[in-house]
Amino acid sequence: MKHNLFDLFQNRFPADRSEPFIETGDSRVYTYAEAEQASSRFARLLGDRGVQPGDRLAVQVDKSPEAVFLHLASLRLGAVYLPLNTAYRDAEMTHFFTDAEPKALICRPEDEAERGALARASDVSCVLTLNGGGEGTLIAESRGLDADYPTAETDADDIAALLYTSGTTGRPKGAMLSHHNLSSNLLTLHEAWGWNSTDVLLHALPLFHTHGLFVALGCVLLNGTRMLFQSNFDVDEAVRLLPRASVFMGVPTHYVRLLSHSGLTRDVCRTMRLFVSGSAPLMEETFHAFAERTGHTILERCGMTETCMNMSNPLDGERIAGTVGPPLPGIEARITDSEGKELDAGDTGMLEVRGPNVFKGYWRQAEKTAAEFRGDGFFITGDLARIDKRGYVSIVGRAKDMIISGGYNVYPKEVEMVIDTVEGVAESAVVGLTHPDFGEAVVAVVRRREEIGRPSEEEIIAAVKQDLANYKVPKRVFFTEELPRNSMGKVQKNVLRENFADTFSAPPGNT
Ligand code: MLC
Ligand code: AMP
Image (tube, rainbow, N blue to C red; front, side, top):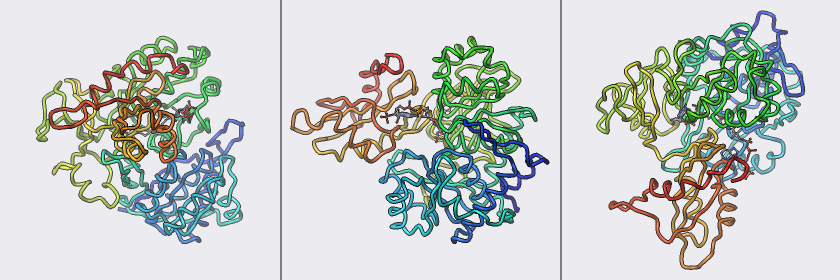
């Protein structure tokens, strides 16, 4: 079946294309007409530079309206959008270039020399630039091009986006999401969350992950209304903008920071209809404190890069703290034991999901893909959960060794691999510890070789900073003479978490 996500969006754009789409912090307004025209010009330029349907388009740029238009251009071209966190370092980028083999890279002008060279060394033939202010060679070279690009007639199962997510082996893998995966999920969310013609989203999230790129932006595009656009999350600005918004989506850290602001009051939230939280567990105390302060019950939902959204608390029914709600319409969830046998209501086990939202597999990793699906099509999420009699899902833990810090996933293995290369390190174990701002924070426990005092905490942190994105860098490094192990020789991370549990008990800013 022919289907392109851009066509779905475009059919829902307001009839009057001069209606506002994006309003930036400096009060510039971008209309739907500009989105249509700019995405057309970008698609034409990239097409002229050799990007064909199915080619990967790697994008590592700051948040801007033009970055939104670039995503739309990629859909129109039938290309595979590969958004990359601006925090990724050269070592991480090299893996994306060699694994995904993109045809083109759009990067920040200041990164062009270094990243462009890395990309070219990996046979990326086209490198263009875009900055947060909407300038760069992408803009300059597309000026005056065709504003009426014919959107590619992709198949519903063609890949629209490739999003990298790390894994327990330490090597990020690309999750392939089709046009239909995304459109089915966005239509479901748009309906479930009751979007209406007066809605205005306060968009505070980055544009390189599922939450900000698909869930938040996608709902606005399906709604054909306006969003207030924060180029970075700034809590003062957010509090200033809330009285002009009706919907906000954030990770728990956003809510913790909003609550820490004395300006967050019922009055500031008077036009708000819906606050959505996800990407990491929302603490019950945050849920209750927010309700008390603002009169709004946060709607918590749960998803994954591989599936977009799976569960959501209801818009109209009861939103229960500590749960992520029932599966969304058209999506099934079940809990299984270690043999894959379905468990009863209330029992804790592995969360598995099935539905039109579930991705097509990991890029060029057929075996890994097969290992994460059951024969009947259920995807094994790696989350430990239970489902109560009413069908509400509670995430109670993770079977995968993963930390979620401020809504970003960090796989300890990836960090340990870097630490273990530092001279003087014998071995390391990375764990997530409770943190008042980020929910969990990355911490390393290291056993050094013979030399006393080398490497230092600062040296280890500096080494990780060199190779990995800033949110993966340990906030603290502790030294030990021995890592606790079980009888199988496996490091007991639960013991480390207990031993260092109080590390971040101080309020944010004092840690
Ligand atoms: C920034 N830092 C972090 C961090 N973000 N450290 C740990 N965890 C994080 N998430 C580092 C910075 O590099 C800096 O370190 C120091 O912490 C302070 O930075 P900051 O200025 O306070 O951070 P800020 O820029 O304000 O970013 C915080 C944040 C951001 C919460 C706004 O992390 C963020 O946008 N998170 C959202 C992530 C997201 O979109 N997740 C969705 C994934 S999709 P230093 O040393 O450099 O000074 C998904 C599926 C689903 O999960 O279900 O949605
Ligand atoms: P990612 O691969 O970055 O998309 O992260 C997906 C993971 O984030 C899920 O497997 C969950 O472990 C976690 N997650 C997302 N939303 C929630 C939530 N509301 N509560 C608890 N965990 C969540």
